[in-house]
Length: 320
Ligand SMILES: [Zn+2]
Image 1: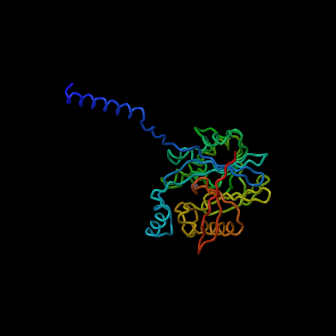
Image 2: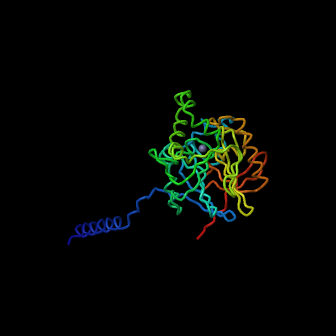
Image 3: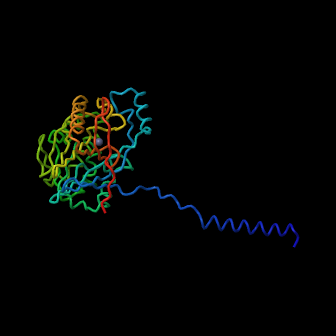
């Protein structure tokens, strides 16, 4: 064989070997989906399960009130965030041993494709929607009530749903929807649609202000973000968890500056006052906080820092 032919043969072998090598060792395709979103902690004798509904992209530059654009830019950079900010939507299950309670119900189809995962994550966490006895709603915005019903039917067929009467009177009113401007009607529509199956079945039971709901869980009024916005205080064996709903929205800004408010607050001043009161109490008492829009699981503690506050996420625990 001539040297040139030898070289050609060697080259062919090399190419074939290389082809074999690349096909047998191809990179695995990217999976590109997240783990099921649930996280469990104990609170005294109660089992708390944070359930992720996913996230939605929040244009915080258009939603926050009372902060200069340059200051918002600075805060976002400091926290490695970009606009629109992926904003968690969290709900919480409380198993008291005698009742299974859920606080808020996610966005359903109201907030885009990266939200609305509540039901899948409840199932992944080991519960079935039929097992939920009570649902406590912090307020009737679409990202907290959208998961209650689907295609006109109750997603939680055995649950009694409860919320403050002031929110019910406001958001479930056809008259209020009729007089709202065209871009404001959606909020009323979301509420009426979500609650309709429960109202029809006699399973919506509003309460008025601070109310003991079941042993270990009480409603604590924090009106301002909406007319009947409510937080829920959970207590077992002296351990406390307060579920904040929408007392705050953006950790990167509103812990350092509680006076920054949200365009969607029904009453900015009242919302700010409730936020400041809740922060001061949480920092002083040291109890656990669960918040609807803090990065999932949204559980942690608050301490004072400078003129504002700092957030301490819970330490990861694994329950085998
Ligand atoms: Zn919200």
